[in-house]
Image 1: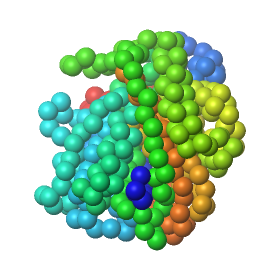
Image 2: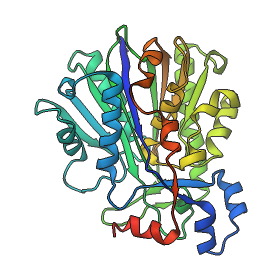
Image 3: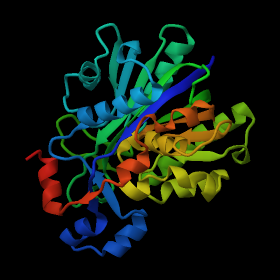
Image 4: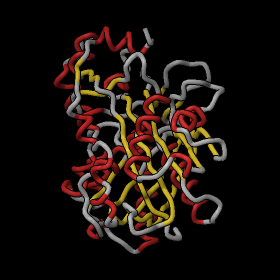
Length: 346
């Protein structure tokens, strides 16, 4: 990738949590069976005064602090999300305005289900590698929607993560070694314009998830002539607690390589932020000269696979911003009624 690297990263996770058992009780379901089926016990919830913009801003601020740059140094900002507050009015320019970037920057809102943010990462990397940009921010943020009594209601969560890219230097956190994408027309998950909640193909979405992640992963491994044993960590999109564990095992990765990325266990699935948060969690503990394998997934459908190699900046910049674990310590549980009020912004 012509020496493109991660200079900073930041996360934001709302403090509010809704337990699976709270939702299950409302709909007369056995909470233990639901927890076992989905592989998680709770999810993060955006408060009534939070949305994709506010969470994206918080994550981007943390990324800027960790990178130790000025907002004015940024000349590209892309925000990937399924839950942009406005159908017509960009999230990215609002976030950039709050950050104080200025006026001379390129921005866009991206949509590709849960892989919108990784698509932004690839776009920025290409601009930097070509010399058309110097520093860019890719943000993944979602306040995920779920129809009441739908299976998604147990997992659809809220959070954000941001990554700052520029040319590799002595303070870089991780080098972007290479990437690969794998896409198809697979209507496993969709939401028409004006419809408040998404629809999905139920159990058939599982086949799409595995096919695309495996396709992107194998292509990149073959391209770089690497095997799962060459990596210290792996990150996969986390729609629930079971899928990432199953695909990791299928590809040949160990549970030890996967474990540090499994934020799904604590906050559910914040869609576009999911794989970004997994990568952030890994970087919070990784040491220099370690290899990280990451694959996102977005319904519709497609996957982006990446290989990162950590550099000495991963240690030097670790304390510049809050770690993901710091947000997990700030937890406040709410009732289902409060959850409904937050969702309706009452």
